[in-house]
Length: 120
Image (cartoon, rainbow, N blue to C red; front, side, top):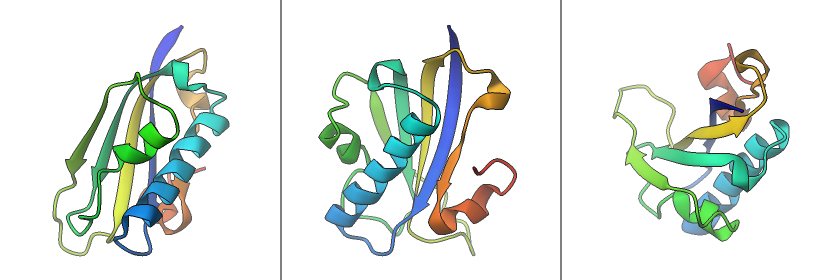
């Protein structure tokens, strides 16, 4: 069993807690599904949010999905001029048999423009 890192991002339409929970849950679920992972395969998850998001912690969405025994942490992205607004990013460390080249990184909606080289 190998340890791999899986990336993902989603852009929110608005800074509202319910909307954030919905979109982050969608992103986290897509990461798990596209990589044939179960919550038990998660080692830890880092969430970052752009400085314009204040409504809640993105990790709340994971807890609401029932991911309660995995270390989660939230941080703020750098405030870079011209960066895409209202973005939540995920960096999940997982146990998997997937080769690095087979890991599916998930960028939903407009966030796909952030990493055209690896977005699936």
